[in-house]
Length: 261
Image 1 (cartoon, rainbow, N blue to C red):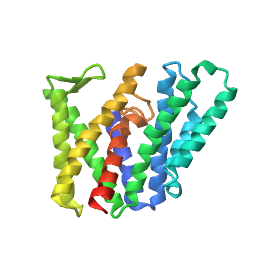
Image 2: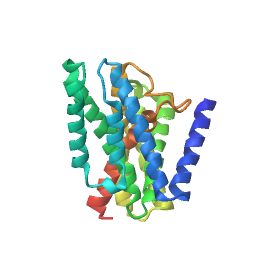
Image 3: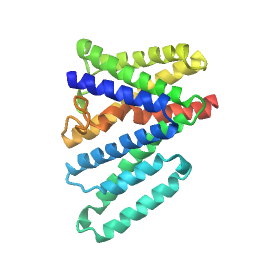
Image 4: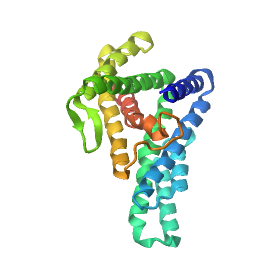
């Protein structure tokens, strides 16, 4: 537990620093760090299934998605990635796993790189840094509520074949916490209607848990508890950002397409 607390405090301090005290490109680098490390962890999970992944191609492509000057060039990045993967497979000895290698590498690029790029896209919206704070508070607050109260009061398993410790009660608590924290964010620092913030809190409460279960599905298939060990007591990069990968695009598209920020 002390390791978990210390790691959490360090991460909170660094994230707060790069988000509010330093120029925007420091947050870009911070986000790319999580994306690149997460892609590496994803590759190691796939390796446990005896499938080769072009880890470094994946890390480069995932990082490219997060570069602001390449926003709008997603199809170009995907094309170059796909072309590179085929060219590498031409000289790779294990020809019989070419389909799995190319498919899983592209999955990692899209799942971690493209979804992770929305953390940065959010920062370039009006009041973007406050929306990132909203995202972190709502997702992590929901996660904490689901974990603590679900562990204490959970009686009915949610999807035991994917995550044996998650309960329906915990999912309901996490969803409720996300909405309450979202409303608190509206009261404290966001200029948006309570209806929109209620909808955003609800969407985050759902998509955050989907993201959590998605990573649990991968870890379950690879038969590991954590995606990595880079953060003592907390696990790996993917363990920290799993819920954020799906919620960031939800918040971004809602703000851009519905609220018209």
